[in-house]
Image 1 (cartoon, one colour):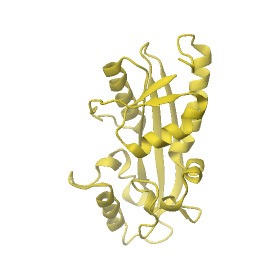
Image 2 (cartoon, helix red, strand yellow):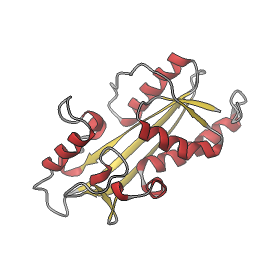
Image 3 (tube, one colour):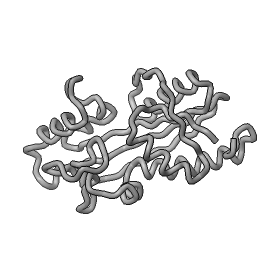
Image 4 (cartoon, helix red, strand yellow):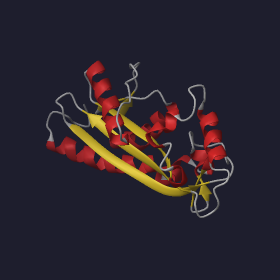
Length: 200
């Protein structure tokens, strides 16, 4: 089965392929129009992106929306994680901004979580959805050169996501959790719907 993935983020594409292609689900990229992320939740934005990709291609499409939610910042950046700060900031700039805003927050008050919502939309209007979270704390400095986004400043059980192998990150991360649940739900959907098969 093929799923169009509604993202241009190479890191996310790799994670989706790593987790889903062993299940005979082929993740396919396409030159897609950027959808306006007007939702108020991660899942609403994931649905908006997947539905836009499905309508543009006519094929089943999947999208995720994810971000980091910091307790001391009232849950920010949240759904605005990829657009945090000023428009000229890149991933590194947004990471540094978050560290700057947390500079006076002491141990015991640096809790945060990553959240991920995944949604697949089919041409017949059906959807398959899953969500995942992972709890941790914000580090005082960037560590490691792995992962992407806010991974280098996110700590869980003494491990920085920027220092984890891909396999270890998949076990721990919000997207890994969401993808495992999504894969289970997608298998159930395929079994119950004769229109879609894993070998299609």
